[in-house]
Length: 50
Ligand code: SF4
Image 1 (cartoon, rainbow, N blue to C red):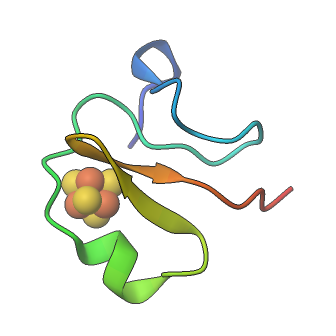
Image 2 (tube, rainbow, N blue to C red):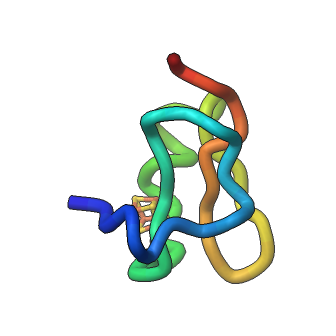
């Protein structure tokens, strides 16, 4: 489970986010490409879901 204390600034505002434990495995981007993008070394939620 993502830790709000490790939330990456690259995420859009909202309830869903990627945190700094992301290992950049690409799974979220493959499963939900409309919501996630690769930004730097990590993924980020780039479309607000709230
Ligand atoms: S790339 Fe996506 S699925 Fe993989 S660790 Fe990072 S946030 Fe999780």
